[in-house]
Length: 536
Image 1 (cartoon, rainbow, N blue to C red):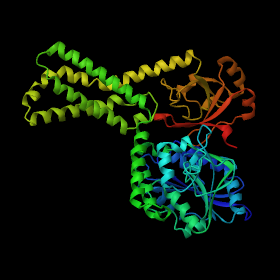
Image 2 (image 1 turned 30 degrees about the vertical axis):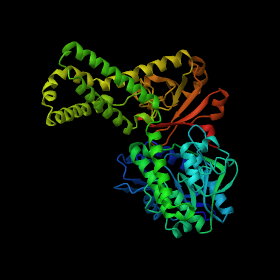
Image 3 (image 1 turned 45 degrees about the vertical axis):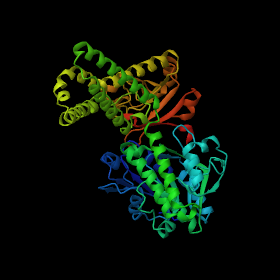
Image 4 (image 1 turned 180 degrees about the vertical axis):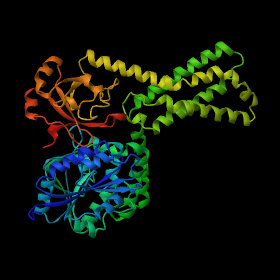
């Protein structure tokens, strides 16, 4: 081993990360060239563990498996015990690092011996800045202004916009209170003196706490814009969406209690403010797509009107109207609440995944419980006359179909509008090795606003039989393919091992093509499109 090489240990805590970690590890492998790097990955009790073929492909990685989810901080502390290098990088599995990221941050650490932690510019997949890459410690005013939107209205105000420091120039090196836990570097001896992350934080807040304790040691936390990384925010939380919200605000309460000396108001008021912010934050995150819940209510109203019409037509005199009205509202409420907590209103997707399968058994159970309550509550007539409600009950069971129907109508309306208005992106996939193209030729187009015309590949023999019909030719014929199809976007497919076919970015730019890296498998919207110009 060359002693002059810069050395670092990279720690990744993975949870349900099979779709994203190959691209992350591939980018780290590329960024490790000329460095002495050890990579440690802890699979943190994932319901969908990292596949053996991924582990086989990245043989340089030290793999650790945990039977249960230890949380981020505790998982990092466990993985750090395997580290041997003087610098530690903590990197989320849903990130892609630039080729110079590790080297530039290590150079910065060596030039700044007073630095405890260092973070860099973190971008969203569309190239916009992730403001959480440099933060101030939360204050009452800063937290309230962020919650109610004042920080957005006055982004340059140092008091109101203090939490995410939107007033600071992202192109300038800055000493900050805290950096993001999705990508940062810390000296190993400092980490060990601090006893690592605080295990009390399950997820969220542990990076804030570590930075606070680092400053308390007399060291500094820095943000540097010398390099970029991309972070697909929230990918590890998809399968535990509701619990992740609870974890976030619980972490804020732990931080406030632990470091109450930084606040100048009673701790009970700080706790009340955090709980207030949690209520607003949970509501806004669970139901950001208000238009979908509105259209669901319209569809439910249509079902009710139809059921009333059928009821009056078949049993006008004896129909227990008030009873069936209350039954309808109970079933409707159960359906909407279920969709809220399943995250349906957190996404603009119109696929309506597995509505019928999930909601019909739920509606049967709801109706059974309702009728049982009416019967045992002494309303025998309502229970006995439930036979007269049969037509209405059948219509109630149409609720899942109604909810899915308007989504299908909206999807195809939007689909044809984009085609005729020429607002639909025409794209071609680059790739074909193994099963990399599976899921992308979907009738409902897993990438909204993008029409996938087919694929190109320099290895046509590796394309699966079912996808061979989509092959447009080799990448070398891209110019003629573009002229023929009018396509101006190339989506580079990254497979389970992070492999992607080679391409000449400069040549493609001369063809006036935009080039994106396509990561993930497309199932349930689990993918990311990365503009490669954002990585340098």
